[in-house]
Length: 257
Image 1 (tube, rainbow, N blue to C red):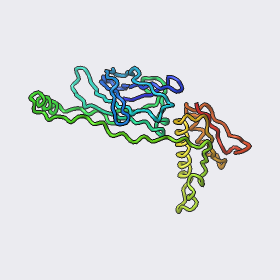
Image 2: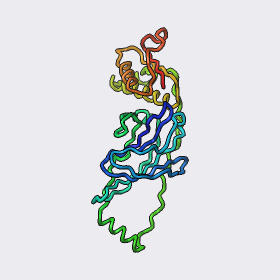
Image 3: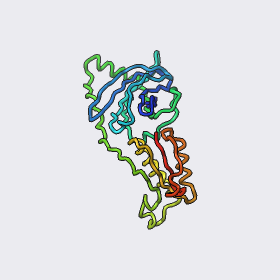
Image 4: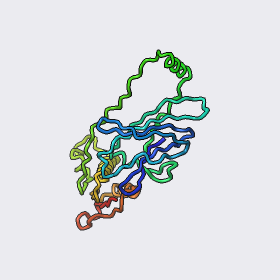
């Protein structure tokens, strides 16, 4: 089961629920913002099906997006198993949101995809179910506390990166030269790629039009990995070597959609 956000236009995303299972799915969808929950709709979704749009979100308002709250209850007509209710709260963060884009099952196009059932719904033991029903009918069932929505994380302002991001090791970690033992080439590359991915995510989230990554020439490994990443990202308009008179072949200019 997935929540999928797919482009309706370059700036507008539709939020949909994907049921990629062989059971019916009863669900509710709501939003939580500033510690307040607002229920938006409830419905039933058949097996291997996609819901109608549950909401629409604008990328320019990314920092103000509410958390999505989804409740899921699998159900099979004449089935011999009852399932517990699954509740999932999604607060979107730039560093994970922009790397979640992939082909969505059933939807048949790319979307920002979030799995809702990492832990499958647990079956309810029939003895427990019968005992609960009997207690409720007899009036002896303990009162259930009102559901309390989890306290949302404080909203973190996403700051745009510099127009020029220097990925040289001495800039990212000035103490690297005196580390003992020194960083391996693999660790250095990972540090540089993490800085690149973070800056690119923040550039996309804050609607920057372009950004320059200064990677140097060296043996070309970092440049190759950056170009490979950019070529797979559908939010990139194009990229090219930046200002050869200033950087030579040691920097890449990225134009964002």
